[in-house]
Structure formats: structure tokens, C-alpha cells
Image (tube, rainbow, N blue to C red; front, side, top):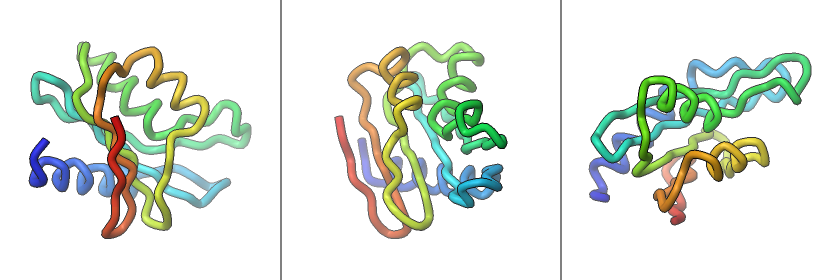
Length: 116
């Protein structure tokens, strides 16, 4: 994946984090994914008073992609302004179900780490 595309996806995940609804954690997280056929989707965390019913940004973005017909994910970015934000347990379950051999990037301001 070229650096320009990585930076574009990180920026889109950052923009998605600005739409997060997180009154409990006050920790906005955005996610962005790129499908193998070039489609881009974004999502953000959505919290409710019961954390168990809340949705992580990765759950939202994968749900959006699948509901729009995406079948293969090439790259997935998770972004938080304050620190590197690694997938939660629930998000990992989503990833296990729908993501195979995908590049995963955890990003924050000016820094990111990439995983396979």
C-alpha cells in the first residue's frame, strides 16, 4: 500500500472520529476501511449508557461496508487523537468474522503502527 493512500485513509478515519458519539468515555474514535475493489467506508464509535450495547468504530465501519455489499477488506484504519487505539474485544470478534489477511493501522496524531 502506498504512503499516499495510507495517509488518505488515516485522514478519513480522523474526520470520522469528529462525528463520534461518546458521552461516557469522551474518547472519540474513527475508523476507515478500503475494500479490494477500491471502495472506502468510514465509521465512528457510538456509545449508549450501557457500554455493552455501545458500538466501536471498527464495528460500525465493517457493518456499513458489509451492508453495502463489500466482501473483501484490503485495509482497516482505527484513529484516536489522544493515543493509539487498538481494537476492543468486540471489534476483534467482528474482524475475525469479516476480515482476512488485511493490513490494520492504529493511528493517532502524527504516528501510526501497521499490522497484518
